[in-house]
Image 1 (tube, helix red, strand yellow):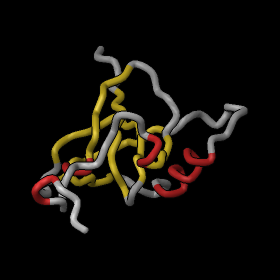
Image 2 (cartoon, helix red, strand yellow):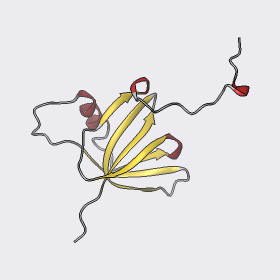
Image 3 (cartoon, rainbow, N blue to C red):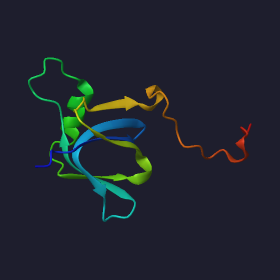
Image 4 (cartoon, rainbow, N blue to C red):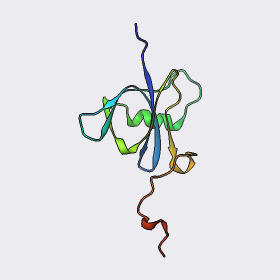
Length: 110
């Protein structure tokens, strides 16, 4: 029997980077969107509670399916073990940077 697949999805949402774990990820029937189903959160038995994961649990509590714009997706990984779902500031994401735009010609305008 095939083991259950688990995906880690990182994407931009309102100047934050969301990291979620889900059992199903696929291209949506809505053009330009990715569908995420069966979002998985950490177990209730853990002693350490992460406030960002609690915020995500509250935000996605009654969500059956989420549609993420393709241009917002940073990365999708198939993983063996689940980690903590979290929300990070875009300023502290390390090697993730914004798509260049708005500055034509590569020079700053004064």
